[in-house]
Amino acid sequence: MPTSIAAPPRAGETKPALLMIDGVGTRDRDDAFAVTRTRSSWQVEVHVANVADLVPRAGRADARALIRRASSYRPGGTIAMLGLA
Image 1 (cartoon, rainbow, N blue to C red):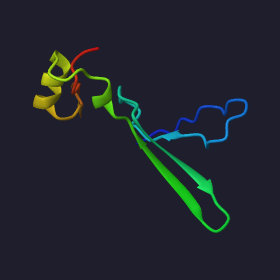
Image 2: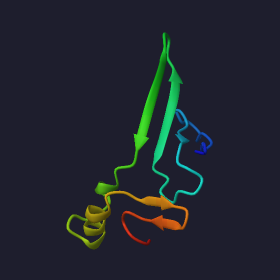
Image 3: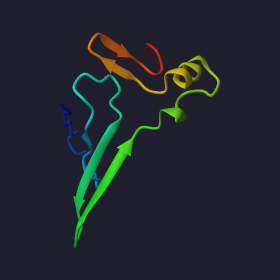
């Protein structure tokens, strides 16, 4: 079951708090959303981390990610897309 974790707003913060929707056991907290009421409807923002911006191209982590494609969460443990931290 996903969990919702919202950081407290910062002083002067004008953006809505993000609600994380990653599962309880996940190591990769990288999915979140925010909902804001507008004058006539609702605005929904979906936030997904872009790990590719942080992984050097053609490096070891990039090569592992190319093979694994995604993190795999199994009852016996997690196989991380980028390997162990």
